[in-house]
Length: 119
Length: 436
Image 1 (cartoon, rainbow over the protein chains, first blue to last red):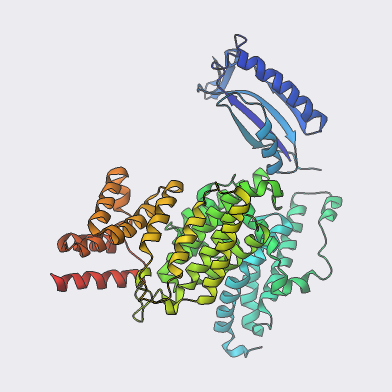
Image 2 (image 1 turned 90 degrees about the vertical axis):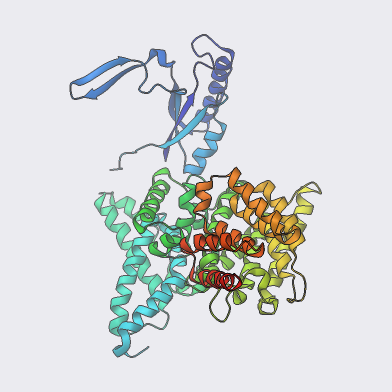
């Protein structure tokens, strides 16, 4: 099955925009982790995301798609990146999620990916 | 085979019995095989409907559980095939479905051949940490022990639609998130175990509190004996597993003494130990000693006993009583509740500790403890908790505070206690009025 591991952390606390040391260290860890995941054939895709200052959101309203500056939801923690992995089941996905680099207080959400029916 | 004339009633009674005895095993076997809880449940339901029809017409077969299992197995295969056609899967994929092993039906028809490991697998699925905690015990009772949705709803004091919705959500989570139907890797067992044990505790408590075990739930207390034995066999080095197995045996040993001739509940300290099942107590002792030994060898002298070991030890202390002339083990019990508080500072433990404290240090100390409980907790929630009023009523009665005791008895009776408990409470309340 495919799973998305969605990583949430407080981008201000880790100094994502001004080269904070926590962030620099985390980037290094992600590179190493991703290399290992790819080598073992587990990682299918994924990316780190720039901070929400780069976010633009469009919302579908009765007046068409309205645009605003900023992320979909203002919250203390933001989506900072994701991994797309292919593993046999949730337990295997949890095992990967346990090892994914996280900032202090950060979270990782495991979501099942919808795969189109085989034909 | 019985006469078809009285078939209608016979078939219904027999089906209810078979469903209770074998339903859980059938669901476990089917869901382990098809890796889908809904397929397993629907197949069993369909098989029951067919059973009623066929058994009423032709009589109850000689081995009704085998009949039900084989029919459910066929229904499950049919539904899986139908679904594959619906999803327009390539024939090649449909062929991947494992064909039934040649002798499976005969093998499975034998009750004992539905191996415990399949049920254990299902327990680990139902108790997966990714399943909402409030759904785990309900799901286990429904699927592993074969209780009906109505029965589970009653046990959890929920309406049937609410419970059904909770079960549906949990099953959808299991299917959509890809929770595996395999036993967890041995390295993950200790971690997964706590979720399993907590779930079984809730499930067992539901069976134990029911009218002193006189009701239908007593049937799945037997399941609990078996499930805990299976767990202990598979995890012989886990003290908490062994301790929980001990606890269930101690509690079951006292079942014959929990009701008096009039059908009223008999409190633990008034139960005649001569009526307790000594064999079951011996089995409990063996598990508890094994738990203590594991602790000594595994965690060293510093390893403090876990919550289930302490609870089992409390039951063990009671079960060590040989007759009513021996003093009840209140001081030991109080000490164990003190230790248990470190793990579980909840209302139930606090109430039990207050009862023990009242016996050891006097009624006034016990009542002071209850007052402190009201101050420290959510008083409104406590006011809805029947055992709180029952304990308080008893202590007030003994303190001679008749009017307050009467009010407390009324409060607990208003919260709809189980019939056996109601009888006992009403009797106590009546004795109060003759004192006054």
